[in-house]
Image 1 (tube, one colour):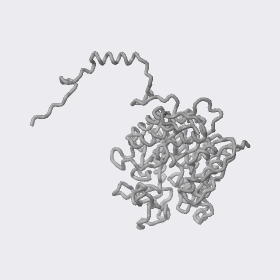
Image 2 (cartoon, one colour):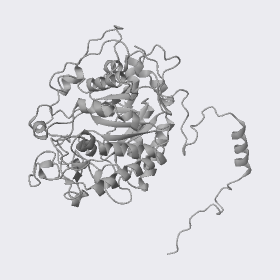
Image 3 (cartoon, helix red, strand yellow):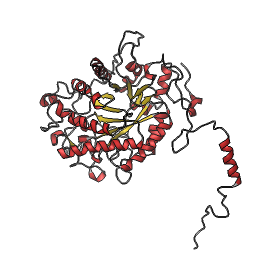
Length: 494
């Protein structure tokens, strides 16, 4: 059978590319004004919003601090609401696309920017392949991963938002499966599930930490226990630590090349940096262990390496767990201490001189025995942020503070960053349903109360409600811009 003919631009059925009609159309297009101008300098068309979504119309003098802009180095947040990094377990585990962001991330992260978030963070991006929490985690350990991140950055910028990237290494909590694997129909389970080599994992053998051994398994269960979710780590060598610092530096260079606006170093939630900070998980006897100076050496080296390759106009954040909630536990007593708010305050005071612009204050995640009051006191993490902020101001140290953790309603977010009014305690019941329904007593007192934070980091609530910024503005009576395409469906004024 003869091959079928394919029509080409030179075939008799094709229209000339430069016909008189098209030339006339081009001239007419150039002559008339563009009433719907595009966002410049991006590789696709999207209309330029007259006012960036989530920004206040007109004078911001009398609006809550939550909706006032904040400039950090050369970047200006149009409001104080930040989408915190959230793992999505949605990238290829291997092959040429391993660790690369996909259109899924444009859809999810882009929607938060479209609906008014000032700064949207990508999920944690591993600086080494074995630094992923799961095989389906994102990374920036090679140049092939730059393009996917750049596509997300282009879209977020087109909607008037800023994009941040969180660089991370999971340490002993690495090589797990996605959380919905091995769970019930609702995707929930108590602990992790080990990702073996036959499903793209790298344990045992390549899961690392400051200290190795079976006693360092996060959930305390042996590898022969089918209910165990974590691997026994091996301790990093000095040479591997040196290599890791360089890999953080290389990942930061790739983030800059991708066009992100902010870099955050992940030092919280029981991942590698946190493991080095805590005497419970760091039993090293060399320069990276022992006292506060030794246990903070890795994070200080990483900060210096990352800052050295960032433009001076680009902000650097650090996320820490202010406490690992092991105070007075048997594990703290056995280790001779734990990482707590006192230690975080001490670290915070040296960070501005290292080039850190904002401390993102979270908590927990380093040990199965942590004891948190999160369901009894709703501001269990934000109080720590407020204490650290106050301590920095007392010593005239300038560094912004971000608060994160169970921030789900408009009044709480406002009070965290407002410089007047009373800070409120959130009494809680024992279930998430009760937590969601809890209310706080409001007051309009102006008694010189200091804010607990400069920005608020919102995580899971954005997944439930991507328009959280717009709803919060409506609830607080603040007139903010909406995306041009959504103006017809704006919430009515309360």
